[in-house]
Length: 352
Image 1: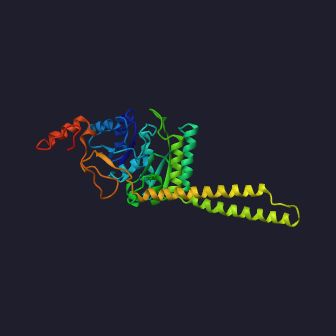
Image 2: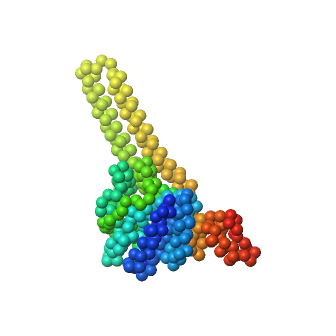
Image 3: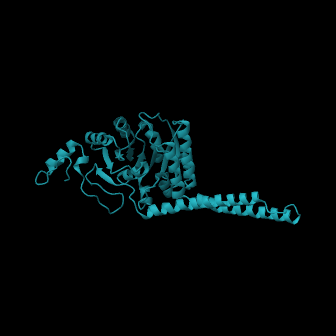
């Protein structure tokens, strides 16, 4: 088995070194060949410098990719997946919650069953606090609404066959979710229980509000459940209005009502107005998604690619201009300057 490990990195300067070093110990035990792709997702600190240093120290196994801005975890994963060269891909977080030592357990089902495509590593014990766990469960409910059959088992620790990417290579969506995309391509999914650690440094950038917003993106971006709810809401309100009308007419015929009640009228208006506003809001969410997708904003855009195949954009057939040396470490800029000293000198802060 040959494995590509993809790590989206954001504010992970304090943990990335240990994570990669532990991977370099574990991976030879479970793979004939492997690579570790660190995708720095526009991190404001010097995470890329750490990733570049690891690539320089282990050029055969580590690849450092720097995105031009922060595109989000799932888009960073897609950037790494586009560069994975081995048959099996593993994704994991950069905060040391996912233990590299658990990877043998994660990839074992793929080795044993050639018809299995995707394995999720699910924590044996919940590693988050109550609010964070509640938000995570909300996201899983949203994935279920987006018609992901294995939504309850979804985890950021995944192992899957790399050729699944062929099923969504055409996708260019800033609201991409890799779990939805993977479930477009296969239903051969399994879960394994793994041990996880507490976050080693800092706090998760996924706050409660961001996770709820992410859940809304999943529901309206990949599912039609809200639109179906609008239909059922309309049917329910119509039925309620019909029965209320019949009730009022019966009371009027038997003389129980001399003048139509203001309370009934006000209640009906409030109910109908609320239903209409809710329906318009849901339809507006879908129209907004269509609008953003029509703009064809890139899923990701790479500034620096650690390998010799050069920087690439997130859309097929699109290339980037030359890399600016200001965004490279000084030693790399100086090495490039020596390489191109015959009429193409490079100074830090200048473009080659």
